[in-house]
Length: 117
Ligand code: 5GP
Ligand code: ZN
Image (cartoon, rainbow, N blue to C red; front, side, top):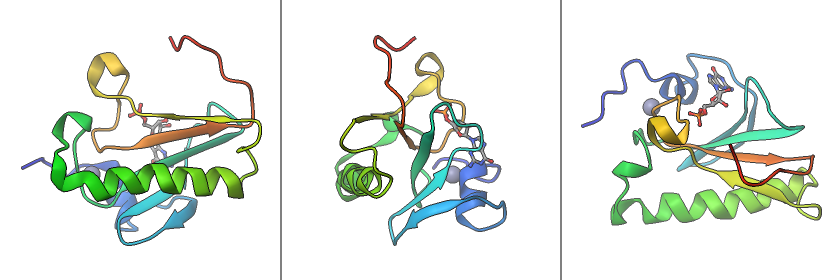
């Protein structure tokens, strides 16, 4: 079982740490990133504590599909859908993951560069 006692995103989900919520339902919460790297920088986070993409299995199919579906909905609502945007998961140390609770970054409002660093 993952250790989520000190997980910052679990605390945000529990309402113990304030955040700017842009969407929430039974499975997911989407919040503004505290230190945005683009004009639109939203974190899409499952309510269930999952350490990283390394831990997912078929029981997480609904969560994983809803993340992409809701990312598209939020992108439309934020008017970044026509110019385009990026949905990113950082996994593990070399992937640049700093918060060990699975989440996806929805980034838009500026032209993204590629390849990512
Ligand atoms: P990672 O580096 O794990 O892919 O992404 C973690 C993200 O969480 C970072 O972009 C960071 O700015 C954001 N973050 C860290 N702590 C907080 C917080 O307390 N509130 C919010 N809204 N975002 C946070
Ligand atoms: Zn957590």
